[in-house]
Image (cartoon, rainbow over all chains, first blue to last red; front, top):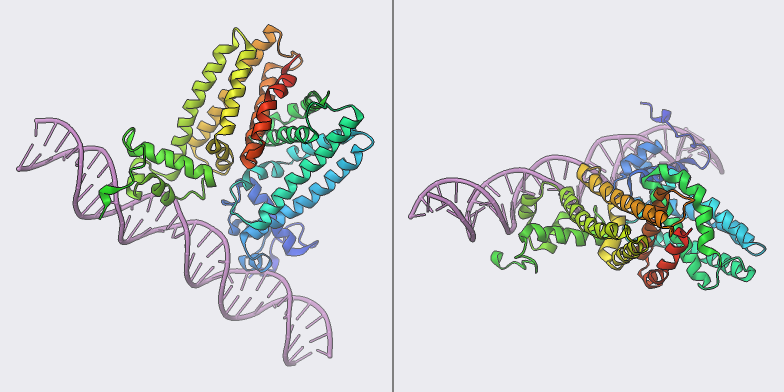
Length: 202
Length: 202
DNA sequence: ACCTTTCTAGAGTACTCACTCTAGAGTCAA
DNA sequence: TTGACTCTAGAGTGAGTACTCTAGAAAGGT
């Protein structure tokens, strides 16, 4: 047969099959949810057989966990950049945060993901990754808000935690809206600065 | 056996089995998503056999559609109240809207629902109901915003549509946050007025 | 009483899908 | 070469689940 002539995806060489599977799973899950993304579909998208799939991952849920953990690492880097900016200038940190949010909104894989993951079985690694991600955002945003309060650019009639909470509410709402109506992304992107500014200023 | 001695749910008399099934389906779907809510589970929750279930609904998806259409009717009423308030006083309409949003947030069934429905198969009635619901909100909020602009209480540097869009972004984000962390509901509720005010004022 | 229609139960069915198993190919070391 | 190991394919399996089928109970009309 043509068993050696498989598609091999485009990323076959760097990272090997395992990476191919993670990437394919991300795409499939983002586009129609965790439950409806079958292992067979992920296998086909990755150019891999079910044998290979289960050689690398014990369960379908484990691939989701791998995807989320990979994303968490990316998020960690992004928020590290935001955090370091806060100390001299909270305004700059907020700008970087807005850019981060908008880049997530622009990435349609990312946009679909949030909704797709809501109904996932109770898996420890999955819930840990999700929780770590939201906790990370909340914590860094809280630091940024606190820095802004010290610098006088952020309102003091709310605690820094509360300001951070509202910022993530806005970010989540924005992602959800863009996910189901990509058209609104541009307008919202342009106005995000104004909205955030109104939200946080003293 | 005790076939006549079934639980009969509490609402058995008014509306009959059909209503029981819809109510049970709403609970089950809200608590662990559409896919994971099995027909068997819904049947048990409704105190009904699978035969009865499929006598009233051709498919599992059809029950979801029925649930959504029922909710749509409720939403329609709520937004009608909001719309009529807008003409004399847009501020009052916004207050009513905030109350509506908070009451949805307080209802934990409602909160779980948004996430649960994201990954649903492409069904015409379902998508129609969802679209009608968001369209309804957007349209009424746009009218309210426009009224506020005429009355001078709402900013004019955004179109009424855009103000409405941001309001629903905030509402969606708030619901999502409350769904995964009920604790934050109280704080957010208290501050919603301030946030909305900052968002829309000239 | 008798027929018709609607409703109900629950065993049965057909199918999907996550996961297993086995056989073998590729690779490297000695 | 041989042996040990990893990787890969794909047919197969078992569990779960949406939906069907049939027999019969209520309900209602005449």
